[in-house]
Image 1 (cartoon, rainbow, N blue to C red):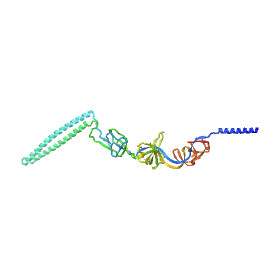
Image 2: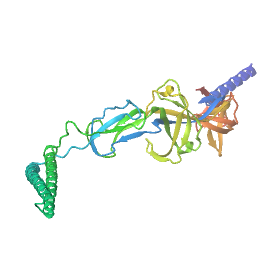
Image 3: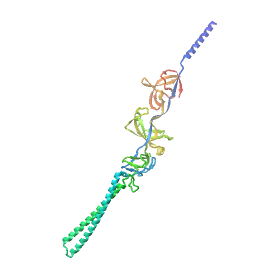
Length: 399
């Protein structure tokens, strides 16, 4: 009986020790995990862009003048050669009181000179008529032999001189009339006001058919030569400009396919890279970091009806398709980490984390291509903590 009790005591003690060890044993670490899959894989570069026109025509004032009110508004359709706005000469500046009084005195003096010229013309005409009658009388006397030829020639010369004096007097009257008109213009026109009618106009026409994009000036007023008035372009020449970071821009080539979303339509728009600009520029990001950007120009592959609701300066989200495959083994980028100069992951096998090296390939957002080291169906730890080591007990939580 004592031996039996002894064995029972030993068994109870051993069971208690086992329970104590199990109780003190650390529980498995809970980790996030993901399954390795073989699925279509697309390596792409995503960036925001904006629409623009290949050619924008700025219609400017060809000369300095007075701009009449500009009727076309942004969005209005225009035709080639259509009159876009009209210009007229600038109104004469208004005179001050002293200058206006001087102009009136000049007008009075010009009218007096005109009257004097008209009186001179009357005298010259009378003298010319008298000289003509004297010549006729001398000519008749010369024919009867009563006066010499020399006297008749002197009469003819006097007649011609008086005729020339009469013509000169007529021109003097014309000059005096012009002086009066010029003096009157200074008084009547130089008032700072535009004439009501009879003013010559310059019509400026559109160099291209399309729509009005922007109106720099709308109201009438003085305008300088070369000052812009309207921007005109054809929406059929719409394209997209995306400013890529210089590193991904190196991998983009003309002909690369582009999928554009986030433009407001239900379906994505397809396009093709037409040109990668050879010169980049520096842009400061929202975080204050200087970035080197490269402009990339994209042409639409679809007909105009597919993107007719887009205008100039609209935002789009462009995805540049650099490479794609059908059955590609891929893993979450968050599962990879560097150790000893190589890429590794923790694979979950039999409830334990097993360290395994792998060879990654192309990257696309949160996914990376696995060239070697993992098989579809295996489960890996994402975002592994520092305390997880090879052989650690883990409890996966599938995300």
